[in-house]
Image 1 (cartoon, rainbow, N blue to C red):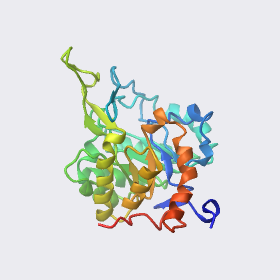
Image 2 (cartoon, one colour):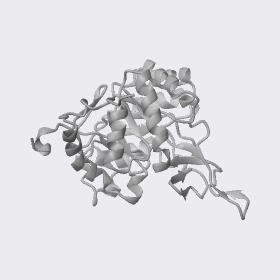
Image 3 (cartoon, rainbow, N blue to C red):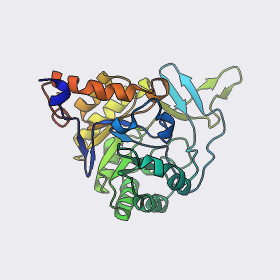
Length: 307
């Protein structure tokens, strides 16, 4: 059977259905308009614009990024113009795209997340909301992602505030990510996103100072893929809700590893910086990989890892 006609790439994440499992991660794809000349945005499985907060944020002092031997450290600090500017200036364009738009939001309190979910949920063109419970680069950024009860509380409040599907993005910087995922599931999350960046730092030994202005930042890229895969594997055993895999994905093999391990979709992050057309190639290559396994749908291979 020709793979291009026999394979259905559609995948389901609770109440959210994507045309294919290849999404682009928040913070690595701008507001999508920046990529329109080199990426066919309508073919993506989902687009996550830069995380927004209730009020504008100027972010952290420089340096904000530094390359490592196998990845990227960033301490941007959620630099953004706030929710109202996003709704006025960016969402009208995003709403014209065929790809589902998942809006990433972050807050310091339960009330922040609830108000953002309410406001974004009122807007046309929003397919889902991702709760960024795991940013290591701002004060309080991981508070809700490191305690299961707090995670459950913020997810439940956001879920009650809107009919839009809710995704919970979790941090790997915890003792038991399975416990946090259970909290998200109990709070009513449609899916969990695993994972955000791993806390790290870089040092200038001559100046005897950290290189990042924030001191520490989030490590992403190939270095964290084994950690992210481990998190997907553990959470797959702990909860029934779907998983979105994130962390060091840069090839078709990486995508397939996450799907087999238990993710129903993936987000491409750091690779967008150095290979911005990767997402398009992955969409093109997926049918053949599924056919190689004798599968015609994504669901047939999700979580089929033999252990």
